[in-house]
Image 1: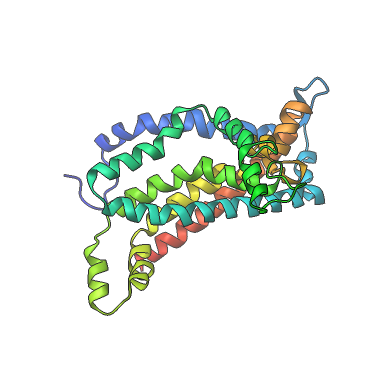
Image 2: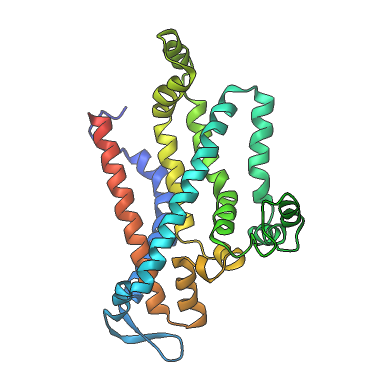
Length: 285
């Protein structure tokens, strides 16, 4: 048996190397290539030039891009917060219900993945359309004006983002809630805490790891999303992912698209490392 503190054994390295190699080849290496491309000039034919430059990184100083980045950040934070608001009570309920209902709810959470993502977004486009049944019902109830629409608004983008990424919040939170010792809730009630106090003071800290994982699994994909804003949002709902897609496909400026994507990735990486260091410090304390 390997002694504590002596490092990983040969068997552990053998088990880890396949997955580590996969990550290096298909994740780390492409990210490094994109980072290098961001320092090259753009070719007039849409390719990559042979000279080195920092011009594309200066695009981050553009006020319009900074405004777009701020919109992306607040939409991503709002989508993450809404997903947590829905997923935390759902995880608590799933962990406490019977095996039959737990499996049934898990199936309902996973079923949307059986359908193509693009089809699901197009379905929401039909639901939110100004001639759709939902808008008609809201107008008949005088909750929506005659000239008001649901489609091509920031609210529509936020709604569909929450729908698309909610399972990524439910699954890690359920995994954490399933391992939670619910007798701690009973002990808190016996000591005089109300149900609400016990939920927020005992259950929420007990699934802190699942909450952190859910935040990362929702926030990071939403931050780079471009398909949903493109299909259900208007020009006022564009996110940084739409600008990256425009530079890569329409403008065929791969170095600038790489600079935007690399800057976004570096920002997320720094934030994730900061959160990880704080959690590690709290665990050691």
